[in-house]
Length: 338
Image 1 (tube, rainbow, N blue to C red):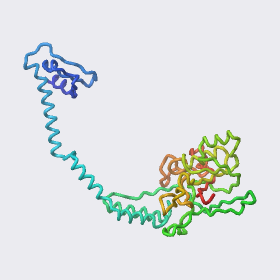
Image 2: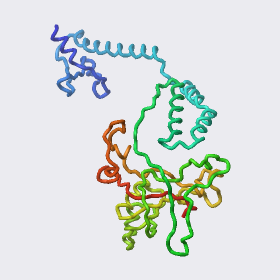
Image 3: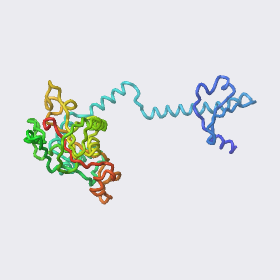
């Protein structure tokens, strides 16, 4: 009896499909089983049994099915599952009632009221305010400190030194203030810059390279134009700005200027830029990083916690160490700067 019980426990029933059993199969009390040692389905058909013996396995199978159905019904009664369209609509309405335009406006105004560049005192204030808001909502929120390498411009300058009839042009490299937006007049607002751009003072002939893609450089080379020891000017779009810089560096350029082309970001001829429309204003320049790695350049692949191992600046600037190659001075420009 114990052996028979053990044999039953080692067998697992599976749902039967229409192709598994036919009417003739059921009349002979056939049950398909498979054991742990063999995943192949085996058909066990009793050769010679009495009527009651034939239906014994089937009764057991039906009992299991009935027990499963009863269990499902009990679970359904205990946990209400929203399936009807009316219940789904109620859930949707409840979800849509939660956001508040007033609260969204107040939060956005708080974040946008003052510059809060990463690592600045204002950035810390906004982080603490955000944490306090989340705690008020019942979320266990906390601030964890990481010490990462960040960059900010001390000064940016660009001027034309040749030909002689164009040497008077010196762009401001700043965006024009907007009358209805006081923050654009804030002296603490940093000018447009590229994060992790190299510092340097470089001079060279200017070469336009479209989007700065590999194929753009290859097309120039096919025309006999080299960018070695030259300044490259490219437009935003098509690929990540960091790849534009890396492509220029790989071909010997000394610096990169990246501008926002109105064809991609500016308003149509019949429209004005922001705030008259959603388009980038003509003096607007895109900020962003040119770092092609991930995380902190000094801790590639691990957390920048206190006491963690760090690369030196020389190692970080060496592309063979981190795969970044951020060695060229770069400046973002707006249309009115070029």
